[in-house]
Image (cartoon, rainbow, N blue to C red):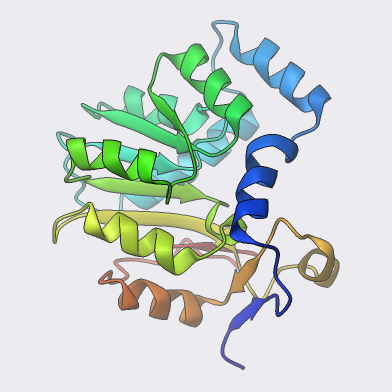
Length: 218
């Protein structure tokens, strides 16, 4: 009724960070990703679709491209590449997965911090380039131990006109089997609950019209 689903019996924060850092991807997926991104080639349709989620949301804002843009959970770096192509002066990623961070930084020559976003190492570095003009995360917050902590830390690194764009599963469209048995997904929000979480950390929703029954895009 509150628009949120989570676990009562939870894994520890340390376990979740280690899982995302070392276990989440299969060896075969890592090998394919490294091989594909080692070649000079345009993004595939699937990669562009993920990157263009960021572009679609960003067009609703007045983001200052002179300020840094940071992707929380940069994955294999495809969206970072897109941000760089769009003319952002400073592009940086934070990626908990060791192999993803390594592959992304090698492939696109963009700095990717190999760390959980809430880790002191990442926070110390980001403070040196703050204020961050734009934070972006794509299907990341539901994997974190405490989304409120992530948003709070991000807000601290921004000024009043900073933006935080998020894509994550929609409470109303997530399959029951995924909700019950996907331990990697620790949280699930409906649009109202997620907006309340944003408001709690000083953010106001500019435009959530890209949201679909399956995916929140805010």
